[in-house]
Image (cartoon, rainbow, N blue to C red; front, side, top):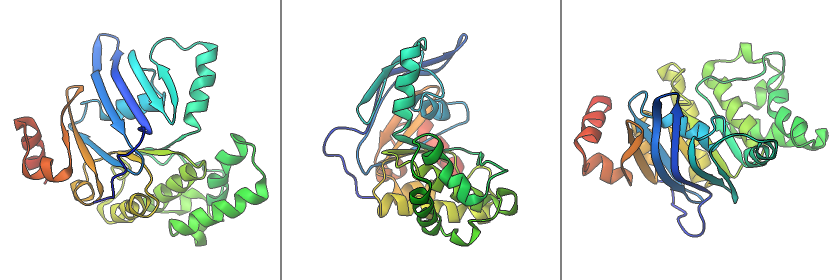
Length: 257
């Protein structure tokens, strides 16, 4: 299991989070914290609110109610004003996000994809960014693919590029939204291996929505089971796997293990 860094202020703090789409309430009062160096695995059935939570943390979806705090930037849900849009931009500078689909720029090379964020968003020097991006590609095992275009890569390789691109922004927390769900089983392991190194070597705080229970058992500090828009149960992996407190959690784990 990853070494938990529970000391100090949380890097992510969610309080009273609700999200409604019309009359459908997808999140119903979520309270959650993520501490420095901690890996939180979020799991549950489709439609339980897992991905919506991540999108609210990054304000890709604006919460209906409640607050989100990331790296000291605290924002409330509700209508987006001009001032709030700038606050959201500032918050996102501290968050890296990796999606189910890789969302790479097809017209750019692998190296250009990794360089794009720091250059376009932060306006950093190209020469310095090129060196850092090359180092990141080496860290995910893709230094030899720097000049290739995404179409020439496997799905697992594209997802590793997406991880490197997110890391290039030097985030303080990483969000992973089912990063292996679009991959064939034989490609899943290479992506999970990169994520494991992030947790165990770099101690990167991570919120990971996944059904990969082997990864959760090995890497997670805490797990949270989402059910119908609430956290039904949370705790360390050994508690949820071996001493589950709710019938719904046990039924889900029995189905996926």
